[in-house]
Image 1 (tube, rainbow, N blue to C red):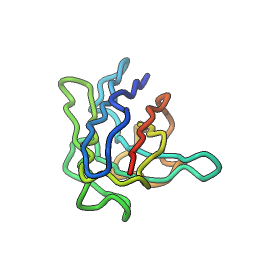
Image 2 (image 1 turned 60 degrees about the vertical axis):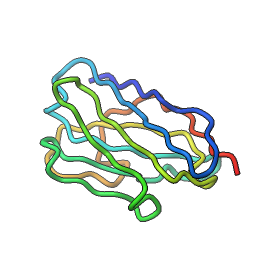
Image 3 (image 1 turned 90 degrees about the vertical axis):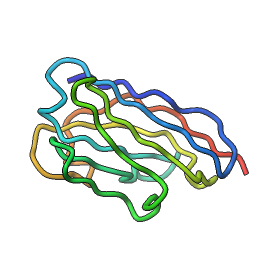
Length: 123
C-alpha cells in the first residue's frame, strides 16, 4: 500500500486542522492505521490509531480530547481532526499502515509509512 498524507499547514494556537491520509494499492480495510508525529531531534511519537474495522481507537496522552481519528474505507482515506491546537503540536505528521489486527501504538507495529505533512502552530 502507498500512503499520501496531506492537510498540514500553519495555524494559530486554538485553531483546527484536518489531516488526510490517502491509500492506494490494496483495499484500506485490510490495514490498521495510525498517525505519528516527529519533531527534529526527537523520536517519532504515537498520536492515534484505528483498527481495520474502525471499532477500535486509541490516542496518545498528549492529544486525548483534542484529536479525533477516523477512517472511510470506501474512500481509502484516514483522517486526523485536530482541534484546540497548541504550539507543542508543531511537528511533521506521518500516517502508517499495517496488515495486522488490533491497534498499533509503536513504530514497529507498522510496515508502511507515508511521507509526512508539516503542521506548525503559532502562539
